[in-house]
Amino acid sequence: MKKQKSNPEDAARLRQKAEEQLKLRKSETNKTVSETDKLQLIHELQVHQIELELQNEELVTAKEKAEQAKENYSDLYDFAPSGYLSLTKEGDILNLNYAAARMLGKERSKLINSRFLVFLSNNTRPVFNQFLDKTFNSKEKQSCEVIIETKDNSQPEGHSLPIYAIIDGILNQNGKLCHLTVVDISKRKQAETELIVSKNKLIEAQRIAHMGNWELNVETNELLWSDEIYRIFDCEPQEFKSTYEAFLAFIHPDDREMVNAAYLQSLETKAGYQIEHRILTKHNQVKYVREKCSTIFNEEGKPLSSFGIVIDITEQKQIEQELIIAKEKAEESDRLKSAFLANMSHEIRTPMNGIIGFAELLKEPDLKSENRQKYLEIIEKSGARMLNIINDIVDISKIEAGLMKLDIQETNINEQIEYVYTFFKPEAEAKRINLTLKKPLSAKGAIIKTDREKLYAVLTNLVKNAIKYTPEGSIELGCSQKTEDGSGMLAFYVKDTGIGISKDRQEAIFERFIQADIADKMAYQGAGLGLAISKAYVEMLGGELWVESEEGKGSTFYFTLPYNTESATESTDQHPEPSGKEEDVRKLNILIVEDDELSELFLGEIVKDYSKETLKARTG
Ligand code: ADP
Image 1 (cartoon, rainbow, N blue to C red):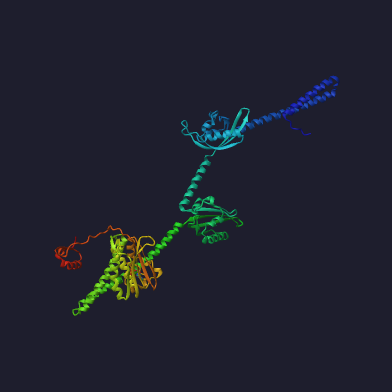
Image 2: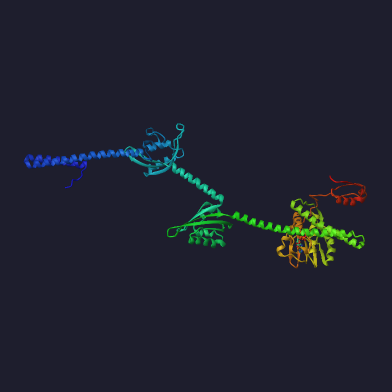
């Protein structure tokens, strides 16, 4: 029979049973105890004796094992890498291991009976206290993160250590106490801080580069965007459904199909793609973005995740477009400059040829007086034409340099228009053109404050052009007060039945050096500056100048001026009117300061009849 393993209680029970039986037998023996029974009893007692000895041996071994285990456990406790502490309910340290002592920065023996809380930083002490209370109230394990601070006056070299604490409250015969496990998490905290720093750096870098990144889980269709993509798409994270379809909805409708096709194709070809397209933000703003994307696939070739970046290139696109416009403008102005120079050389050379050619003919000794007269007139006209061109160039240069000044004074509009009408009437008649005048302004209402010379120059230019570009028909010149729109403006117009201006040139003719049709420039004289100067003058005076025209039917040039009837005279460039009688003038001594010999000669001739004496100097 297999011997059952017995424990100390069983052995004690057996011994007691054997002794009781022995007593019983003895009492019975007194009556009738046989010799055989006695022997039987002795044998049983011997068996019990052996069993007891064996059990005793087992007990000794078990005790030795328990002591060894205790020793092992004690080592484990003492030298465990995590800190273990036993605290009273008040937080006083009953026991602790070396790791805990290290964290608290003192010798283990010196820490017994110290209050654990004093080692915590001021701001984390209440946290721990709270958890300690919770532990005893809820009888459940609690955990928290606190900071051990050993740096103080007594320990200037001490440390500040973030720890993770697990508190387990127990109730034993000594009252309430708790076991505390503390783990040094300084490395984890440092890694967390570094992670936050590098995440912030990444966010900042993306913000500077206007570049965001995204990740699409192809299986779940979950799309993750970085902060910068939300900024580019002008959308808040809570407004975005985080799906591929939600992203497609942001794409400009005209580009959506192309973007979708590019992505689907990249899944088929397993190659990444790069694409530029427009997006439409929440506020309907069109932006340009460049996208790069690639996808990872599993071994069966199934797409798992797509990754990509989005770069906001709106500013770059705008600059590109501005550059294209600027380039086109530069090319256009280069073309215009060449055309202008060609035209200018023609414009200057023609009157110059007239002057030099006819001056040569004047030398002819037998020249008839009527021819002489004709030649002189041609020379005069050619000179005037050249002076016109030079004046235009000077005026436009002054306007561009901002040097053109206004001379605002009371001006009789009716008089100005009438003067221009009278001046051009003969020229129009010579071309058999009917020039008419409409001036419905009352005599009193015709006086306004404006720059008379500039108004005259504008009217002259428009009527001169009308005559120039009207082979036959009529020209009407007029002015009316615009009251219907309450703008308080005067509206002038010059209407002709001439060649008209094609729609595509109607804006360009107001640019410097542009003629309506450059190819046809030889047909009409002109530098293409008149309208640019007129427009600048009208705008300086506070009005607008524009044209309505139909090719082959005629043009009407309109311009407005503020109907300014205040009577005070104001001038930004005033010239005092010369005064004096003719006889006073004759008594004058005149000084001519001129470095050009011909001009000096010419001036001398002019003033000869008016001066008593003429003095000449070459420099100031
Ligand atoms: P230009 O000295 O060439 O006349 P302008 O600046 O006065 O210069 O005019 C610019 C161009 O506008 C002219 O070359 C002509 O082609 C066109 N233009 C101006 N006025 C008229 C008009 N009344 N009818 C048709 N074309 C006109």
